[in-house]
Each structure stands twice: as structure tokens, then as C-alpha cells.
Length: 460
Image (tube, rainbow, N blue to C red; front, side, top):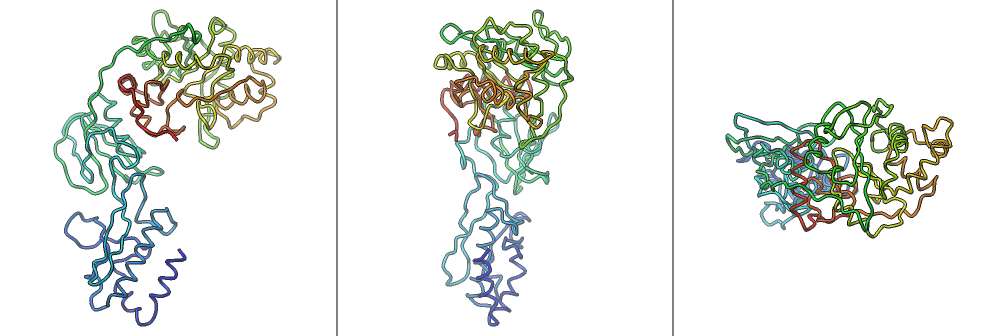
């Protein structure tokens, strides 16, 4: 901003004032490029050229170009004055030169709609940038707030009937403004700036994943909490039928607030809760600590976890590989529990030793009605916490369960620096991926993960 002020001061000298005024129509007050009448799409952005400065001379042209450069740099940093340019991860720095006779070449940053392989290696087929695919008659849908065309391509791969997609960089939505259109067929391809289109990668065949391999690492008691309305029941039934997720553990259980038969031999364990909660805290996450205080009470009362070495809580939409967890646990014998993220334990998968749950059970006994862990509830202010933070702080800070190692291969999700989580191919040691809320996407993620032996991205 200081540089911009200096340039404007110099360029406002009387001898240049009329030249600057002449250039005003082609350079807006933010310093970003304004639309210029050129051959091509109507919204094409172009730099000022000699045509914009008739009879005004080289110095005035360079002053205007310098202001444009400062404005573009401000826009790339998200400056308050920049409205025309938005910086997207992966945008290329295109070199545009001032077309003024005798002037030196002045490089100026201009944002590209998308650069495939710009941020991390792309796993999608070659994309058509600044092209719209118009859907043919048949199936189609769209999703809001999809930040990259790479993620849009992965979403298309995760829906069996999707054969093409178009990503809209700015659909005018609040927050992340981008949108993803999925379609069954294409009727035509139209040049349109700000859109990226393509076809999904070939889908890998699905095979039943290996089960838990107890023995040296210890046996697994795995459970999920299911909300009775919505997608979770169907997702868990599919996992059961395909021996996937928690149903690959040594013992599995599903908890809910009503009796539901997931399979002939699997009926939900009923907890006394509405399973409803608000959202809040720094990340606007579910404030579900009290819900899981009841779930843990029920689990402790049933007592099946005592037959096993490890207790694993898994969200229904987390793609989970018990065999990989078994291999990982060989090096963590004696741990109290294992943290899954450097920012603190996250809820999609939580891993505790049975000893840690025994310690929690003793704290439940201290309460007058046995319905909550007394010391943890009375010594922590957890009104704005989710259940994951409650358990992490309760066990480590209050009940002093130790040791608590951290292992990033327990979970891949965007909230813990796994940027390309949606491709599900972070290597054959990644224990879980989150979130995948449909059967198609869950199955596709599992197939990708089982067909991958090398990591796709660099984890921070």
C-alpha cells in the first residue's frame, strides 16, 4: 500500500495528470484489471496496452502499469482493496508484458482459474480449464463449497453413475464460493472462463478388506454410535454385509437411542439420549460431550470391552481398516491411548487401551448415580467441547492415563493436514479416511485405499 501511495504521488504531477485521467477507464481504482473490449470471452481480463494511452507518452503508461502490478499483488495477498482478483491455491503466476513501444517488459501476476498439478500431484485425468460441460438428459446433481476441481473429480469417481463433472470457481456462495456439478453424460463443451471440467479416474474394483490380525498386537473391540434417521443405518448395514469397517474387528457393536437390527445377529445397544446437540466452539463442531458420556456409561455397564486389549470408537462415515490398525499397534503395547492428530485427538477414530477405559469406569463409580465420570465432569469446563476433546482432556489431564503417543497414520482428514483425503491413497499403512457418507463413496474410497501402496501427498 505504501508503494502504491508513492507511485500515485509521483504520477499525480501536473505534467502527468491528464495522462493518468486518460488511463482511468481501463484501470479501476483497486488496481485490478477491468474488462477490456477484446476478442474472446466477455469477462476476459487484460492489462493496459499502448492502445489505452494515445498521445500520452511512455511515462504515463508505465505509471499506470506500476499501479496495476501493485493492485494485483495486493489482491493476491487478499488485501482489503482488492475485489477483482482472488488467489486460489494452485493458481499460476502468468507473465504479462506491458505493450508500450520502448518500455521494458513488466511481469504482472494474473490468477489462473486452475493449474492441474500446481499444489500437489493431480490424480485426475487431464482437465479442461475454462470449459463447461453441459449435461445431457439424465442424472445430475451438484454440491456446494467444493474448494478445488481435484476434489470435484474425486467426488465424481465416488458416484458410480457419474461420468463427467464441471467445477465452478465462483458460484456466488457465502464462504467457499465454489460448486461441483456431477453429470451422467455430456451434450456439449462450451468455453467459459472460471469453470473447470473433466472426467473421473477409472474406478478400481472393490474386494472385501482383510480382518483384524489380533495376536501380537492385541484384540479389538470396535463400536460406532448411529443416529437412527439418515444415512448411517444403511452405511453400517453395507459395512456389515461386506465385513468392512468395525465388522472386521474381533468384536463389534453399534449404539443408538432405539432398537434397530443392523443384521440378524447385530442389534443396537440402546443409550438414554436424544442424540441431539448444538454446534459451537472454535471450529463450530458438534458439542456432543454429554451424548458420549452416556455412550461410555452404557459401554462400561455392558462390559464386553474387558474381553479385549483395545477399544476403538469409529464414526460410521470413517473408512476404517482393522488389519492396518493391528499392524500399527504392535509398536504401541503399553500405551494408555493413542492420539490421532498433532492438534489433539479427533473424533472420526479414537483408540484406547482397555486399561484406559477401566480407569474411566472408576471415575463413573465416584458419581452419586454412576452416570458420569465425576472428577472429569467437575474439574473441567467443557460446555464448548466435542466428545473427542472431552475424552482426551479427561484421560490425560485429570485421570493421568499415560503414555499417549501420537500417530498420524491413524486418520486422514482435511482437519489434520491430509490435503488429498478424498482420493484415499495415502499409502497401505493409513488406518482410516474421513468422511464418506454414501455407500458409493465409502466403497470407492476403500477400493482406492486397497489399490494404493504409495502416498499421494506430503503431509504437513
